Image 1 (cartoon, rainbow, N blue to C red):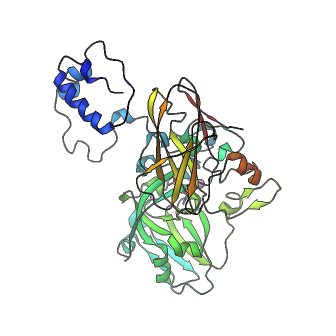
Image 2: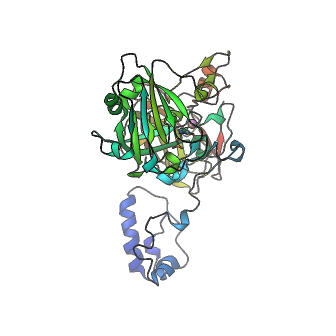
Length: 425
Ligand SMILES: Nc1nc2c(c(=O)[nH]1)N[C@H]1C(S)=C(S)[C@@H](COP(=O)(O)O)O[C@H]1N2
Ligand SMILES: [Mo]
């Protein structure tokens, strides 16, 4: 909390100017901070960074974050990392605000490492049940009419997958960080398929990556024609190698593994392919031995990102709780937050754009007097779907699968502010 202006005497004018500005912006009631015993040197003294000229333009031709933000990075979990090339790291959700994930912090999931592709040598082929099989260069796509510009979340089907049997990973980065939300531009897949000419028996597509894993997934044609995109930019610049440079498939609202990176081929067929990624993985084994297959849509989900285990409460009095909500079925309609483990709920304040199939940001301004809290959030989407509790989910789906866990998360805040991943039962 800012200190009381009146208690500053030396160079009081400077202090008053700076703090008066801050007071106007804040505008809400605040806890009274203890008056300082002595003048505050950070206000009264000239600091190092003001003694000499700073770096000029071109010292940093491609900018990067402040040296004081070095801790804000993607992180992996040692025991989830069998080999670095076939692994995952996680978005530091607790360090971010707004709805767009900075490109360098988007979680990565690779089955065969990052392919480093020369865009001049990259091709996209469309073959199978089409009138004219086609091969596109990146330049061809950049000249193709009808380019679009959209933001979508991508969530790995295994996000929160380690939490099926109970609270396990301590931090929203690890429990929920296999999600990112990026602005893309590219061409609707429908335009490219129309150009190739779909045969009347066309029903499914196979999307194939150019990386060493040769990642493939079967995609129903209806979805491809509805809103899938072939993209080459993220957040305004070319895709990062980690995200599929130079071409990636965008499959809005559907599980991340279908968003094929380093996209090289789309085959049109009349039935699904049942390849490795849809038999050995991405199928959910139920308690009674049956399997759920082709569970494409990511159901509505939310998480409080602050406070959370990596971002404990540090101050009594006014605090800002914030988090993210998303749904693969459309726009987020409402987010409720509970501070007492689901007994009482209040409606969170959503701010910023609410776009379908995109992350949505919510806030609750609250006062903390040091009592224990059990923080939960519950998302509702425009179809009326309400995010379930983990127990509700387990009753239907058992605990055999790691996929599609969209249950309500609980953070326990202790009286000292430390915050932990728990479950209320
Ligand atoms: N070619 C290819 N595409 C791929 C993968 C891959 O290993 N190779 N991983 C998939 C999985 S499982 C997910 S969750 C997303 C991850 O996208 P990201 O790395 O941008 O987070 O990419 C998907 N597309
Ligand atoms: Mo994934």
